[in-house]
Image 1: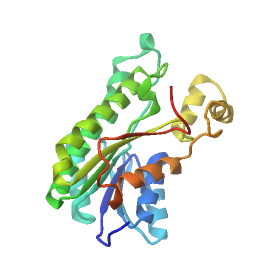
Image 2: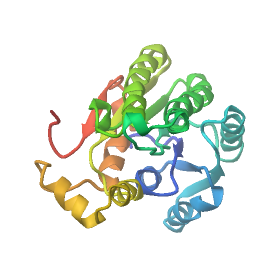
Image 3: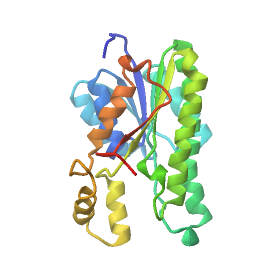
Length: 253
């Protein structure tokens, strides 16, 4: 960081995986971090790691698809930590299935968490950023935005987040707010472990197969994504906006 000014970051879906790694990384850079997740109690481990390292963190329970809960969560963050100037929209769910088996609930749940959730969180936080004349929003897309069998809902949502990112970059840039997206490839998380279980193979086997297709020869870790997010949220990234960065260990076809 190139400033001594205290910044408050909000990271959704931060109880585990990419969200937790991002919260820890931003805290290590001096951010006060609001750790948001559906279950507030589940945030305790992430918050504990931050505070034990000397950082400042707050656990907040919030369903990001619920407008009232989002408004209450952002109000609480502003009151207890300070006005948020960094937002990482990471909260996500999977409801994978082939199109002919996919229920309307499977479709709606994924759209509500990924797209509606990012919209509600960005709308609630941007007013604080605009008032401050400085802000950073990072949306989590995915390599699945390019299309992936069994993920019509997830792929559509993640592609939608890229358009959402570029539009917000145009709307908010004049207020000192940048908006970018990070699109992970295969990352070893609970979510990809659940995918292995769903298709009936061991997680180690799934990772080995994925690594064989990745140019750098390994699957990604949550920290790989946190590193990219940290760049976009930094003071030095003020001239980078409306971009989608694929973090996938190599080029994607």
